[in-house]
Image 1 (cartoon, rainbow, N blue to C red):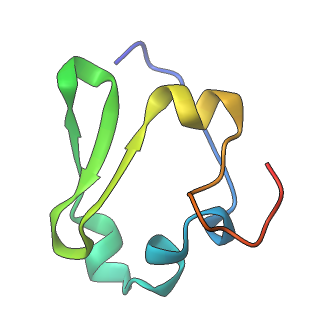
Image 2 (image 1 turned 90 degrees about the vertical axis):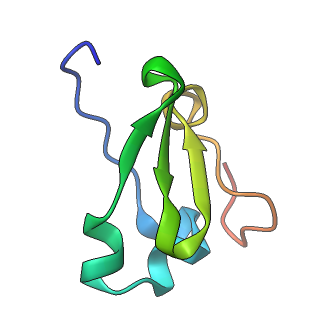
Length: 63
């Protein structure tokens, strides 16, 4: 919401890694800018997690 761009490896989020390009493009901001939601793949990531560099639960990659 403040214009920042956050980039993290898709390997941190297995659902995103396995998603098609079409599924990845179908995202929306929720919670007043506190998260991102992908309806088609049932994935939610908070902006706090992204800023901390936290991986998804069960990820094989260390955060």
